[in-house]
Image (cartoon, rainbow, N blue to C red; front, side, top):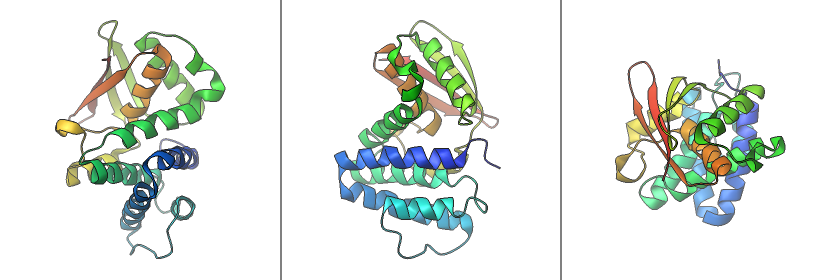
Length: 215
């Protein structure tokens, strides 16, 4: 069972990728759709279906099978990261832009993005909002300094895509780990503090340890 609302996740990811596609072009979207199609089909235990050529097609395929694979949004997360990695050699601009766009789509109506906050305040506000719409992983935040917040990800809805990243060697520049959770929370910190932010993450047997910090 998914710990976040899969329908909401798929909807906002689709909106985000539509915007990113305007910048990176049809080749990016074509790859994203193909990789997401293959991922979803593998999770369903079937051959990738024909006729999936647009974002609407892949979204309908995913939504139509949430009863069989409740974490269908992971197919879109995986498709986005792999397309970006294929084009750039590692995840980079498209991955970061999609995280910021998804965060904006979710939080813009709340008014929180227009406020000025410290990193810890920004992350706690983002988490409270995510919980209010059933879009939150189970996280703990600890302030290390004015510029750095440590994060423990106790339960994550994106483990399927994360495991695929590891298996296929999909990573950030210099081999740094990717994280669908932290890319969005980093965007929240960046948008609410008005300063550029980045993150790092380390996986353990029980959970993931991360940091979000100003750069």
